[in-house]
Image 1: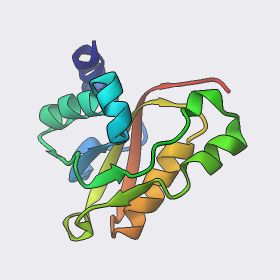
Image 2: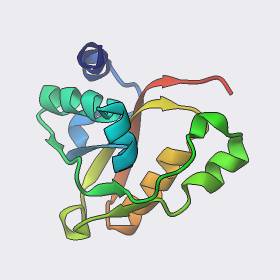
Image 3: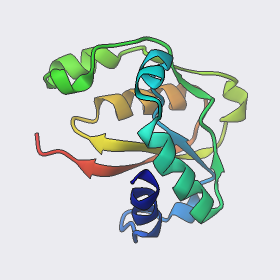
Image 4: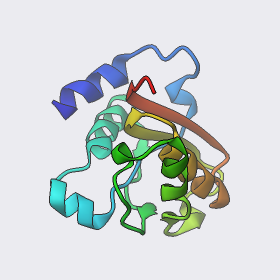
Length: 139
């Protein structure tokens, strides 16, 4: 299913930006404990398809989730924002300096996770960040 959804995302005519203007795709990372539990990272599956389709670099190792947190789905907006503060870091920031990144996740709810990822990437020297998600909740 992830491959099919990734194809939909890769072939969609995004009205707000051109994918070819970006240099790299980074999926929102899962904490290693969550990854072991689930067995896959849905954002990585989508990212692989989009990167392959548009011939962009895929980097799923630089942005890391360093803290295990309560699932965002169980929290309200303010608690979601607080839950993700400081939970990401960048390994080898020099690899990302001056890159134009597309950050990929499966679902956008309040944007708290994506905003924290973007803040962390900007601190590492990323110049431009766009966000692609498969779905958006109505909350």
